[in-house]
Image 1 (cartoon, rainbow, N blue to C red):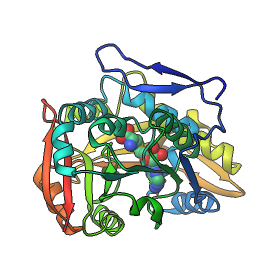
Image 2 (cartoon, helix red, strand yellow):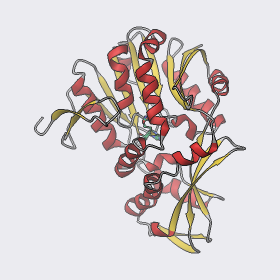
Image 3 (tube, rainbow, N blue to C red):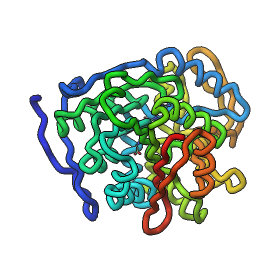
Image 4 (cartoon, protein in one colour):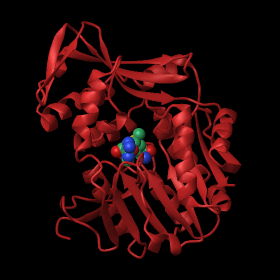
Length: 347
Ligand SMILES: C[S@@+](CC[C@H](N)C(=O)[O-])C[C@H]1O[C@@H](n2cnc3c(N)ncnc32)[C@H](O)[C@@H]1O
């Protein structure tokens, strides 16, 4: 464990999270089991070609998260304009005891899109989970986060599963058998990346995975003033723009492509009729781009649609979850009522 040290990453005005810093890249803590389902082997090029051939052009948001993308997302979470992380963290901190009462004893926490696993750590001391399963498509970020967390909780079994959670993911039996209740944890309002119809299908799969006695703890961004939403996805430091444009850098590096990222610009706006933020990359000029031997033409002003982020009312989300087989519900909001965290029991 050379090079590791326990440290605090306190941000002024925010509580410190305990972390273990400077772990060597290939380090895996002894209580972490790593399961690699190789989520992007083979599929990246096919999906990029299909997306560039679509009208309008599109790319799936899961491709944002290479190592650089995961790091940029962490910076987004610290931006003053990006209220979701701040609000959700405050909800988890202020209501951890009520969340424990709702979830019950000995849960197995299964986090989808676990990223830096920082939010789940807020709950650990209260929920005392029997085990933790983290699922994420971003391998380096997943391994780093799980090792940090496992070193802080050396007696807890941790499974790190590198997978695309849109495909079936078999959860380790050993972990499922060790807990009273499997509880899916899906923070960050990542559910907003799915259309409502796709969100129901996705939650139905989650419901299958946690079983009839399982639960779902999920962070959901709320509908609100357009200006507030606009600011959150158009920060003044340009970090969200860099996150969006990193997709083109990634395609260049990994797929032998010749995008000129400086000839595209970040565009994010609230589509009120659809109830979603849309992120796009807009071509500043007429141009063509070659990706692994195939050429795609862009008109000036033509966009690549890179992300949707649907916003919900509390009641609207309750109805959506009910269609996926989740019933009994408790919900917590932050003081400004910008963000919600729901707990649902399976029915
Ligand atoms: C919006 S971030 C949220 C991160 C963290 N849960 C939070 O709340 O701050 C989405 C996370 O989900 C992961 N992710 C996105 N699409 C995924 C997919 N299809 N399968 C697995 N993980 C995915 C990303 O790598 C990233 O860590």
